[in-house]
Length: 104
Image (cartoon, rainbow, N blue to C red; front, side, top):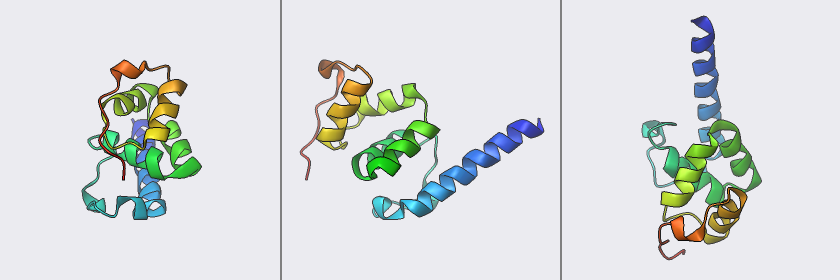
């Protein structure tokens, strides 16, 4: 039981460290209201689109392949270059991706 608590504590600490490291990427978000599980698609999309290699590495270390694929397929706000790269990386057919909005 203590091991489960320890794993949850490490996950919480990793999430808090990520938020402090990537705080500028979440300029339009109440950081205190973000939840690693409930907001995973948003977090994955934001870190992949604007977090560079550190954001990519954080996402791949802390989220399952299924969660990443789900975000790639469903999020419209992911940068098109990263979206195409990740679709290739995870072998997602282009026709499964939702139509993306215009990227600014």
